Image (cartoon, rainbow, N blue to C red; front, side):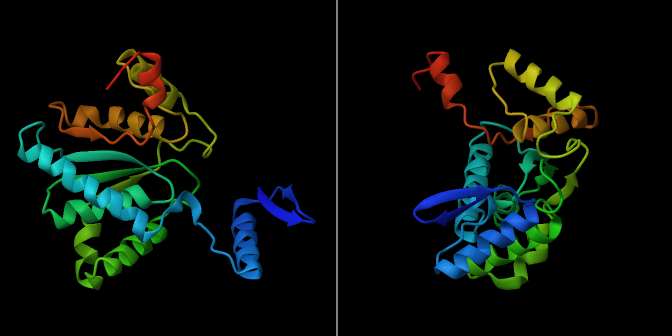
Length: 214
């Protein structure tokens, strides 16, 4: 859905996703305005998850948790995934990333992810020499939890959400629930807890309900 400004009033029209993206860029060009990409996934935004990867590995160094073998994270517009790939590579971690696809392939795809990694490396002044090294941190793009698309809630996703609630963790069905379902699916291969779930869903509302003052 794209908003058009007409006589001081915003008029909304429904479009397919590709048409909506093209329409937004056309409006931006016509109005000489900046267009925020889907998910605000820009190289500057990716830097947040680069730093988050370093923070994780500092916790590993301090003995707060073992170094994970795999990190399971939702994959949509790619900013979070790209940041982890770069941060883990720069820190020399052995951890690999399972990017759990949560939206249609026209948005969540390897080409978009690679482009975001490349542009972020350029921003960091690292150029292409580290590109392949960063992409080696990607274990796979897991499409098994996508179901019929972004709005679909497959049975494993709902089961994962229900299990998480029992442990005080609130997940959303579109993104974090699918990533957690993928992790649960991978547990038989890693029975000693070598997997880490990277929760991208805001927990503040749940904390308020539980009276958590942290």
